[in-house]
Amino acid sequence: MGSGGYKWTYRAPRWIPAFVAEHDLGPFPAMTERLREVVDRGGFGYHTTVDHMIEAFCAWSARRHDWEPDPGLVVANASVLQGVWSCVEAFTEPTGAVVLTPPIYFPFNDIGPTTGRRTVDWPLVRNEDGWHYDLDHLAHLLAHDPGIQLLLLCHPHNPTGRTLAFDQLAQIVDLATRYDVVIVSDEIHADFTFPGSTHVPMAIVPGAASRTVTVTSGIKTFAIGGLRVSVTAFADEGLFTRYRRIPEHLLGSPNRMGSEAAATGWELGDEWVDQLVSLFDRHRHHLVERLAEEAPEVRVHLPQATFLAWLDVSAYAPGDRPGRWLRDQTGVDCKDGPLFGQGGEGHARMTFGTSTALLDEMIDRIVDGLPRPQVR
Image (cartoon, rainbow, N blue to C red):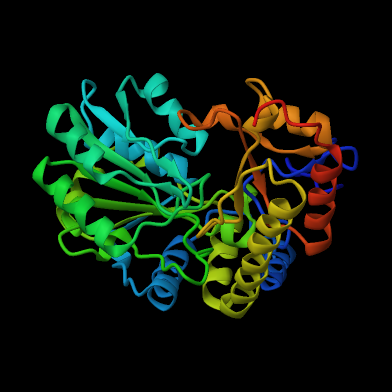
């Protein structure tokens, strides 16, 4: 609580913070050791560590996800959002449109207001088995809207935890090729893909290279969001050249600490991350099973990836701020679902990337604090 972080501040202990997509188990210890070395040596000047960080990212991707990016086609940014916004600038016209997949990571909903681009919703649909992509709907959108120039995927999906299978990705690539659309694939949660699902990098799908940009970072994996480091990776020189037409100083660059930490995690963190994924795999089952037994009116589907649970509390008629309502009722501070757009009504996003003891306390508070449902 004394670190000055955004998550653990005034909210605890009255409210348990579960609203930020950041886990509580990091950072990877070797990162701390490396950053202490930098501090002890006074390494605060201009630096040459970005290339090393990019090489570490490429090696991690090859080991963990069977994708071997070319270091020469990777650009370092300060954040994934910077990578996304720069792609909107590079690959769309002011009159063009960007496809979003609501309910979606809520900052993406700022693309329209901040860039002047039109946004088109390709919403996920829900049935008894969970949330799904409707590829026929995407085909319809692209066929009937020639202004669409960019498709922004959250892959894996935040907040639903949905992954895309290889055949689905292949269909998306086919449609993007047919209608000349650039795919920007946000794969920041890829490292937290659980047994039963596999993360397939969009860039390795046949035909995807010439129209795919991958934006990602180690900040979710290693809980280093404050260090500001990300990468924008290409698999095609032509697309890379188009991107590089943006003035270099608008693309940003990671600072020394971010570069050092990310490189250390990507070089040395395999076993540590394996243990973390195993823990969160147990957590997702534990959360879903306890809620099904003890608070069945709270509907939640087992996420295939991420450490995020998308709670449907609509049975309690929580109003237009369901995350705040849940916080006030239970003391568990979650993110308001309507911020994520269509499909967010009556929902709250809860982070289960924490210790097992704290997760159980959160579930206890939810079970004990919820009122009698108003809707059945």
